Length: 73
Image 1 (tube, one colour):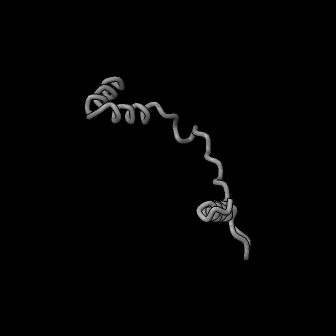
Image 2 (image 1 turned 90 degrees about the horizontal axis):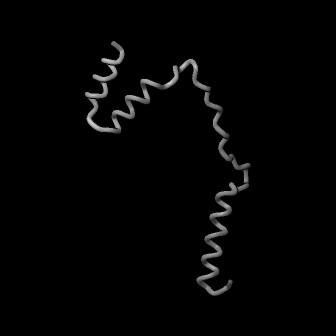
Image 3 (image 1 turned 90 degrees about the vertical axis):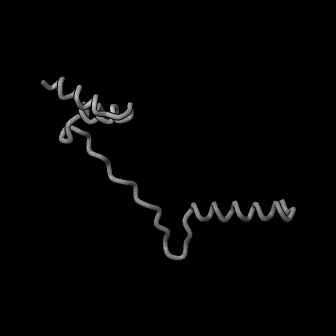
């Protein structure tokens, strides 16, 4: 009876992508058995009066490009 229900679900799928989604749902481990997700890494918070490293790198790249245009480097 379960095989008939599974076959009916596959037949109702319109394309292969939908069949893969159905199969993933059917054979996925139960939510209670899944490994819990870890906490997200904290975002980079600059201290007062300081700029984040990513902004500093961006600014250095802009200055290098301007220097190259002016023939300084």
